[in-house]
Length: 88
Image (cartoon, rainbow, N blue to C red; front, side, top):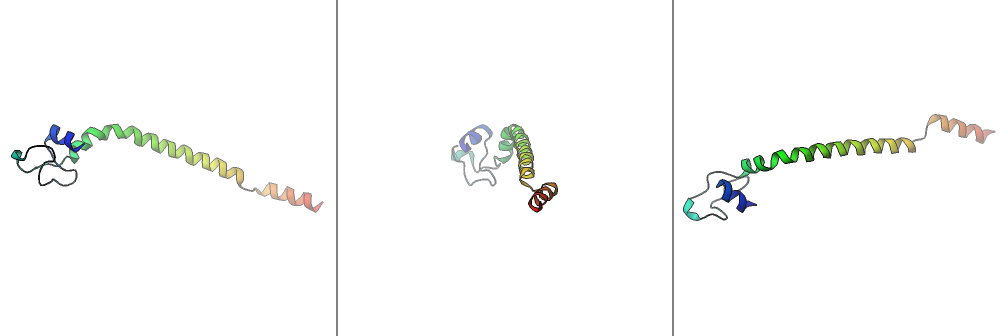
């Protein structure tokens, strides 16, 4: 991945610029620019759909959990009818 970005954009490192290039020749001198901005431009737009689908899946799973939880809760009406049957 670093080799691809270095050859395409003549950059080095992700967060901090490295002392020398990983795959390019030393004759170019020390790297001046990091690859983080270029990485964000190449990958950033494609991850939007992944994020939206992950949020929607999380919401659906939460709603399913609420529905299942409500089936296991004891309601007051059921408790009263059970106590009346036991009493009689």
